[in-house]
Amino acid sequence: MKGKNYCPYYRNDYCTSPLLPSPDNTVTSPSRCLNNFKSCRFYVEKKDEEEGLSPLIQDEKVSLPTSFYTIISTSEKPIASECQYFKLFKTEKGYLPYCNVLKRVLTLSQASLCSTSPHQCPFRTLNP
Image 1 (cartoon, one colour):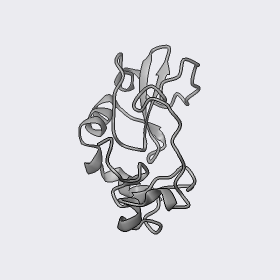
Image 2 (cartoon, helix red, strand yellow; image 1 turned 30 degrees about the vertical axis):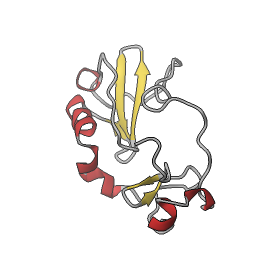
Image 3 (cartoon, helix red, strand yellow; image 1 turned 30 degrees about the horizontal axis):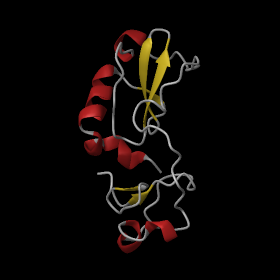
């Protein structure tokens, strides 16, 4: 999809600009978001950084509450998802998938579903 002339923050009719506190569909306009997005007040240039897992995985230790079972939530390999609410944390025991909508660590089966079909997730509609 690179090289197309559409706003990188325009996803599923929502603006996901970092200038907004949460994704919002009241500020989107197809004529602006799909063509002239650089004139939008919510558009900011993305920094030159890799997309995907690299920005999410940090070498520093992450302190997460331990109210989950590490056996069913920890993956030895990184999990990728296109969902904007999915985060992956690297810990001493492996990789932990986290959902910002549910505000909790996901099980491996939930993370697998989030990875294979992120747009069909019923929890995405719960995000305010």
